[in-house]
Length: 184
Ligand SMILES: CCCCC/C=C\C/C=C\C/C=C\C/C=C\CCCC(=O)SCCNC(=O)CCNC(=O)[C@H](O)C(C)(C)COP(=O)(O)OP(=O)(O)OC[C@H]1O[C@@H](n2cnc3c(N)ncnc32)[C@H](O)[C@@H]1OP(=O)(O)O
Image (cartoon, rainbow, N blue to C red; front, side, top):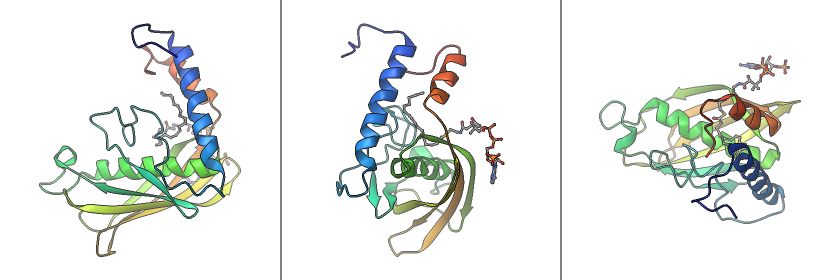
């Protein structure tokens, strides 16, 4: 166990993080697993789902059949036009939700392309349901889609994205190049 008062080399910490996340993920890959508890966050500081990120959305994501689902309320931190969620905040949430589709793929990946259609204003202080799923896979390319609905069932946004499956070395290599290292 790493003591918070005993910093370790970033590479060691990253190895631990990757091992822990992949271990946690692999337990959720089982299609027959009916656990309805929230899926594990990508990382404690993840902007989308990290519970330790005070600036983040702290998404709680559940399985939804073969896809995933998150209920979310945007607040004043996410303001774009007055009373309306910033489009970038909406994109953040949906990008992160796509990152949970990886849990059913069983391999890590990163966003290569993200497209969002904003069909109606996403209002602050208003509950929405966001759903995402894998549409098809072509080698390392994962084509995913999602939509957000309000409480009446009206679709307020749609998105599609391309994720590229990467090896865990992708994250290690990127962190090794950053100065200072960004990994916690
Ligand atoms: C720091 C903490 C570490 C601890 C973490 C612990 C555990 C975490 C583990 C995993 C977590 C992973 C994800 C979940 C996290 C968050 C969810 C949100 C997701 C993100 O926040 S993620 C960040 C933003 N993201 C990036 O940081 C990617 C930057 N990028 C690259 O790193 C490269 O881009 C790369 C390596 C992806 C590929 O690079 P490359 O050079 O190998 O390939 P290239 O990009 O050229 O294209 C590839 C193929 O896509 C085709 N293609 C392109 N565009 C297309 C389009 N529009 N339609 C159809 N096809 C298209 C091409 O035609 C080609 O196809 P083909 O393979 O057939 O040739």
